[in-house]
Amino acid sequence: MANKVTTMKFRKWYNIIFLSTILLTTQLDKIQACTNLLVTPGASEDGDAMIAYNADSGNLMGMLYHYPATTNNSTTTKRKVWNWDTAVYLGEIEEAEVTYNVVGNTNEHGLVIAETTFGGIDILSNPKHQPNAKIDYGSLIYITLQRAATAKEAILTMVNLMDTYGYASEGESFSIADRFGQVWIMEVIGRGEGRVGSIWVAMAVPDGYIAAHSNQARIRTFPRGDPEKCMYSHDVVDLAKEIGIYRSAEDDPDDLIFSFSDVYDPVSFMGARASDARTWAIFSMLAEDPSFEKTYEAYAMGLDHSNRMPLWIKPKHKLSLDDVMAAMSNHYEGTAMEFDQDVGAGMYEAPYRARPLTWEYNDVAFHNERAVATQQTAWNFIAQIRLNVPPPIASVLWFAVDDSSTSPRYPVYGCSTAVSLAYAGNGTQDGVPSPLLSFDIGKAFWVFNMVSNLAYTRWSAAYPLIQDKIQTITNSFQEEVSYLDEQLSAQYDVGNVHEMVRLATAFSVQSGDRLHKEWMEFYGALFARLRDFYVIEEDSTDPICNCKVEEQGFPETWKERIVEETGTKYKCEDDGVVPDLILPKLRGSIEEDIRVSNNMLIRDKTKLRSM
Figure (cartoon, rainbow, N blue to C red):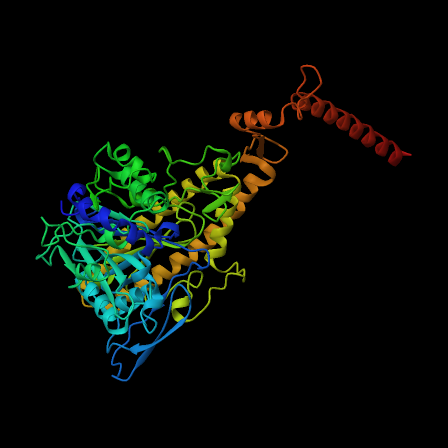
């Protein structure tokens, strides 16, 4: 396969220039966010393409953006552009004559675009090198969705926007899929000082395979001369030569072993451990090859940068929506990188850590693990791009806000012309700051954060309950979508597209409204069950509260740590007596005394009334 490089030849020239590349890069110290999973139709259970996206940022509020379709825009119509990451106003660009309806990261034609940031070498990736650029990666996504209908059209639109208006962001990996079954990975990085636009490579994922990326450039070598499989900028190799970070090997005059990732985003320890390891975790869950996890374990842990993973793999079975949801909820469970058993996990074994990701102790740098599912996720989705339904309903965005492992998703059709108010809002790409200090119980973002933050403090008790509830909700929504698809297709078949869109919109809005209400109720139920360190369950045989109140106490491993750290500080000095064990007897004695006292009081009152 073209993306699997034989590193022996590669090292001939790469080692010569490695030091100069290190001096140019900021990736060694930079920790990025976001995770993507791409599934081709031949790799999915339903024959649909899928794109999964966790948008991870602590200063981004989870909401579902909506851009209505427009027509007959004049040649003088302009649109304002703000940088999605920084909220800085970038300027104006010409508006397209016609724009498509966009909801979230999909549009009315079933096109889906997602991303992860890899950064890359500073000499190219630093936005200061194109100070007049007007297109950042966020604007690139949403403007392209308004102008393109297919994956290849999206790639060309993105290139045109960057080359026309400049590129104001770091290196990015994009996931692009359409209703014709095309699934592409595109990686871009700026051209650097004195140049406009970006250099890039885009590769089609072969049908029957899955791919992923997570803040580390993934495309290495790539085929030439077949635009159905690969497209790239004309200067993708020449620019590297021009700035002195690549030179041709004597036995490779056509530069066929040129690696986009190794040249423009060389792997560092944290580039592997905190970024590409998430791709490893997803692939290890889903790979047909049972040895995949161990084969690339040292690479994922940042110990062997030479043994790079393939760009795509064949899954062990065709993937369902539930499979993809599980993959996007991964915390490295069961692998060498699991982190729910050490002291940092606390007594409730939570696979979460306080930020920042890296920290120091006695002048030595340490890091936390960065899992696929993480607390700083603003919003996440899994897009199903269906090949055998009418174009306006080809894409269904299974959308959620907050942590992808603790938040249920609800279905939104790509043709929807309105959004549930619980999820609606404008983002920094529209010049609107995220209202992160304005708590609003009417917004799903806050309700979902209430559930997840409760879970982080009681993980071992709360997470199974949350997962069961999410599965119940997902199953119900899937049944509703299946039923509604038939009704919507029937409207399309008789030419009633307007009614089809109206019904799809109403369902999408109502689904968001219902889920917001249901999740608020679930929070109340979860809080009642887990308050004050108890685990409380229904028990109709208990006359006091119709419930069973359980004191779970410490797990054995946590008891051991307490004793090892504190010695005899908490030791009970009453010989052979553990006070909690005599409480039931004591409580029974007290209750009997109360009963006797109450009976005496009743007799006294009766006697007084008779006098």
